[in-house]
Image 1 (tube, rainbow, N blue to C red):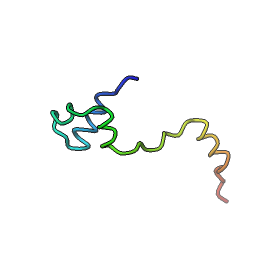
Image 2 (cartoon, rainbow, N blue to C red; image 1 turned 120 degrees about the horizontal axis):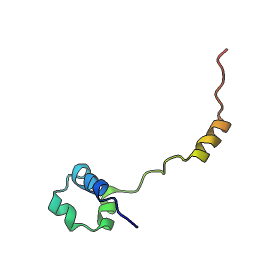
Image 3 (cartoon, one colour; image 1 turned 135 degrees about the vertical axis):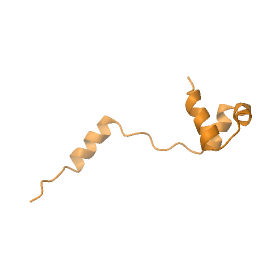
Image 4 (cartoon, rainbow, N blue to C red; image 1 turned 30 degrees about the vertical axis):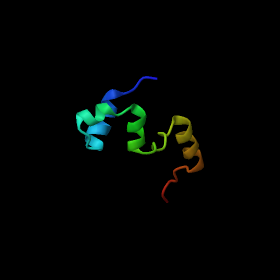
Length: 61
C-alpha cells in the first residue's frame, strides 16, 4: 500500500499543528489514530444513479 505523504504531512502539520520533528516521529498508524475515524467514502456513480431514480426531479407546474 502506497502512502500519500504530502496529504499526511498536510494533515499532521497543518491540520493537527504538529512540528515537523513531531510528525516524523509518528508512525502512520499513530497519525491515523490522531486524525480520528475516516469520513464516509465518496459517492460513486452507481449510488448517484440510484439516488436519481429514487428521487427524480419534478417539473414545476
